[in-house]
Image 1 (tube, one colour):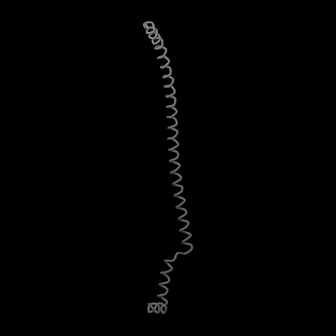
Image 2 (image 1 turned 30 degrees about the horizontal axis):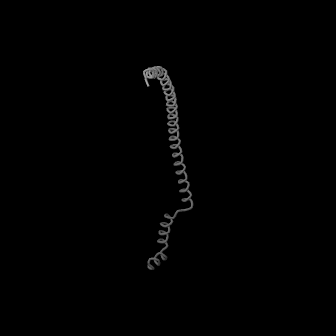
Image 3 (image 1 turned 60 degrees about the vertical axis):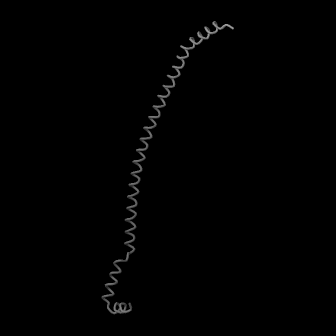
Length: 114
């Protein structure tokens, strides 16, 4: 190892080659700033893509919720109509069957002999 170090120290052209090879591998402050700027730009692009995707999905969800609200409102109206019709049906049933039941009770009471 010392042999190599001595040879490198004695020959300036070898030192130059080694230094230039090492310097090519060293990142400068400018390199780091450039990389940082590129990274920030990529992050910002990703943020915008995510925002766009989220806005699209939220719009879709809002439309689906609105559609479901309309369907629920329609079902509530239909149920209200059915309740009204059922109430009318019960009244008609009572109106027709009450006189018959009273007549049967009257007949049973007349025919009852204690």
